[in-house]
Length: 506
Ligand code: FDA
Image 1 (tube, rainbow, N blue to C red):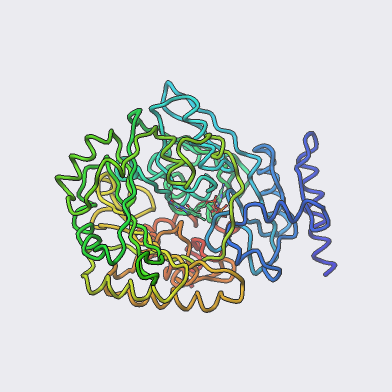
Image 2: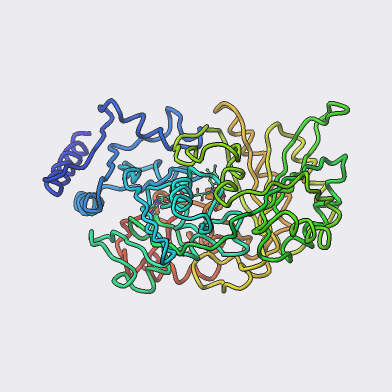
């Protein structure tokens, strides 16, 4: 209506007033670039349909002061902002809402400054993980960072939600290795670790960025790796004894030395001999060392896998990031800088496992996977460094006693199939109940799942929000609510699963 256009008009005036010397780039639905800027980093096709709510404006700050202006003006004029870094949120909370909103897209804020001598780096939120890996490797062959495997993930969402990859058994999560940050708070001030205080600095390392402010940049501790690391993938179908092996893996992987990670990825494939569908378990691994040592270790600890040197590839750490992203390891590193990637329709869910699942339990999983065309499950082994960090060190609480984590994924083609696929993955999730963590049944924030509960744009009470808050954060939920109440008492930074304030107790 016209009252809303007046609000946006005033908002735009406010923005131009606050960025006179160097105007903030703004895109309205009438601007020719609006759609391409909006769609560019939408990773999930089910959130790229014509019925998906679209932002009134997209604001793309070029400098920190633009972020300040966006916060000051949107607050002044009562406009909801959604901060987007890499756009990989599984449920699109960085660019979709039921209420009118604008997107604050940080993709222009992506500088990375590596300090090789002090083994640290400052990374802006709009950078991608691929860019981070590339810039580190440019400076050093023995420095690295511990974060996710998909190079187009944005730093902003990933670091603020945890962030794990093939080295987390050695070094913990991305958020565990953040040593400073710069955030624009609800009053438009820029704060660093010192000035934001212990509580807020704690909250943004795993508590999700969307509830507390706009994090502009992060200082990270770079992590030492040997010049040569080793990767392998061993595939086993059900006919080749996958059930037995996966069952064994559950007792072994989380107890292996911290230098090795062995995960299992499950896909449905066509069996070569009979041409029938079967489940294939791929044991995917990275070892921080050479192949010779790895072969000895695996022979001692997991001989059933039958690892041979033909499975192993020795490479540099940065090449291993190509390997996990599915690129040829001998190819150019430039692919890490490419911010575009194939989009798919999908829905995901997560679980944590504390006791090995019986063979009968596993066989029930296989039967359910075989009902679908493109299902996927990923088991990521925990243990190692993750056991040493306390549950309350940062908001991410899933530490000791977890032997592995599960990610469930349904992929499909075409919007029409959405409901069927949602039903399938929910059924699988229900089936898993007896085998996974209980009270609460825990989940990983970065694998955002609105089935756990949601509110209309962050208006839920403390108790309502606890439905998902306790799953993502366990006992840390309470402290997150306290921090939120202190730093954003009017609940300006909010989304469908944000942290509520204490005043919402009523
Ligand atoms: P996006 O921009 O969508 O933001 C996610 C959330 O954070 C939103 O609520 C947003 O508002 C908020 N936010 C973003 N930037 C912010 C900022 N600067 N300040 C404040 N709030 C901010 N995870 C993992 O741990 N390991 C892995 O290997 C993978 N692999 C993987 C592969 C693929 C293909 C996808 C799509 C996702 C993953 N993930 C993952 C999950 C990933 O870590 C998660 O989706 C991150 O939140 C994505 O961060 P983006 O910045 O890209 O998301």
